[in-house]
Figure 1 (cartoon, helix red, strand yellow):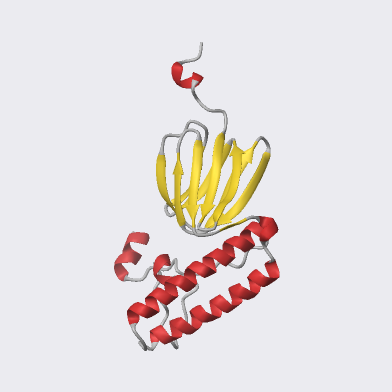
Figure 2 (cartoon, helix red, strand yellow):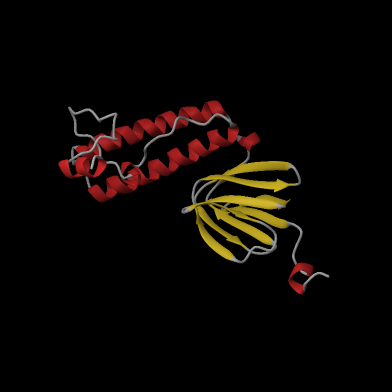
Length: 194
């Protein structure tokens, strides 16, 4: 005998992706996975309500044995027992992507990032303005990379922004050490070799 909760559990999830241009996608799914700012999470029918900030990446949704994907930009996702609503600044499906154009735009964006970082290292210009410009360029780079990933031709991973990786930039004229497993001090050496 089914409990009351089991009797009211939905079989499917309604997925809706909404952009400033309107509804970009409507689908029924058995499962939805989305990229939040804290990592990817999945939603099944009957999921407890959740609201999460969305990170640029791929949303996948499965109906039966068929899995489909779309690329989304920043935004928010609201999920509940019967519905997932994604509010995002942009969304594309694989058939809307021209990989040649996207690769060209990615190269141009990465060049602008390099130029801006060189300007930043020279401490030229307004630091706040430079930071905002760099943030916008990194978001664009991530968006273009997500499109290529969706298309099946992902770009090489980048380390943008440097602060997010926890790595400090290497000063000019010095090479980064390829071997990071060596102890950096006598105390570290003593801990590794008691």
